[in-house]
Image (cartoon, rainbow, N blue to C red):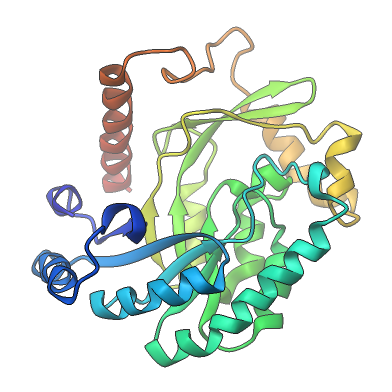
Length: 292
């Protein structure tokens, strides 16, 4: 929270079970006071939709004045649903059941459960999920560039999920072309392929009240193998025209083939190097956003 305040940011997003180990009323009151004095909102993170876990987090959210709890539908990354293609429908039925179970407690507490597109769900699937749950307290945490992992144009994805967006993860990737598709490699916001101005224009139209968090992406590159037949076995049919914007982006924005794409983590650097890498990208991201 102090780091966010020092950089004139608006809030923080934290997983309460990892960072808020003391859930007593006094401890939560101190956290809320610390945030309030700095003018910061708080978003809480949970993992894959679990009704029992979310029901346990809702009282924490209420005590902290939190309006949004982020959750995910799965742990799938890189759009690779091939390993769960035979059980995906069953899994999503469980996610729907879990969200329906917490809809009432969330509404009573005035908290929204916002499901993230965690490199797993298409925009159509996210909208269908929100509609199936119903109510005003189920929405979306839009990860700005995860649509690339399911071969969707990021801005079109944002428009489609539109009014359901409650929270945004603002991050950037560089693209490295591979015979199988591309690698998405983290970078400072403004140094990659994200059309930040375009995204904010969409958000102003469809979700002007959404909170936005800076997310420095994972320390491991995401290899999206969408040119392999197996990749598509986990997805519903898609028209070719829908993936053309991503193909064009790959062709226009791919980094030089001889450029090192691995992060310090992947290169085995020490913790001090990795820490400097992370804080430098954070500072550069804030600086870039201040310029626009």
